[in-house]
Amino acid sequence: MTATWKTVAATVLCIATLCSATAKNYTTGKVYQFSVRHCGEYAQDRKLPDGVGMNAIDTWYVAGWLTAYNDMVPGGNIEGDGAVNSTLLWLDRYCLDHPSSSVPDGLAEFGAIFAPQMLKK
Image (cartoon, rainbow, N blue to C red; front, side, top):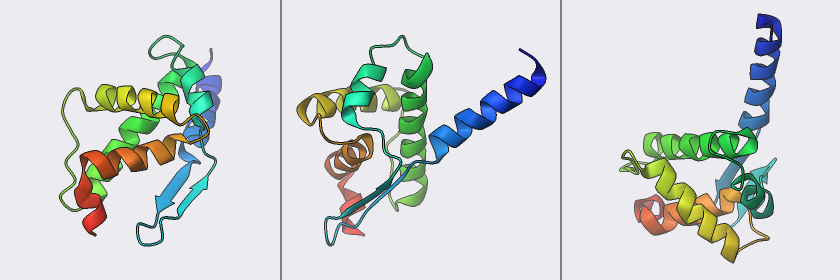
């Protein structure tokens, strides 16, 4: 693969992963989402080997969510060597229990359960 194609591939990958956004208003309970990955798609992705295809992108998405949470939420402190893997395992279960839900919904639920200071804002 030439350097030009690597650049194009990297750009497409960044656009595909960064064009997804979610926000939850805890006062009204409304969740606003754009370009959302659904639990059914996520469950299929997780069948792929680690670091391959959409499984890798889902892992990067969760890692980015954790980083953003820790940076943006006062007192946010979901970290540690196993944070991404533990969150992915929790999300696996969430998606099995809520197949019509989305990955951002699952992450919002995860934050509410494991880091409730998010709700005190």
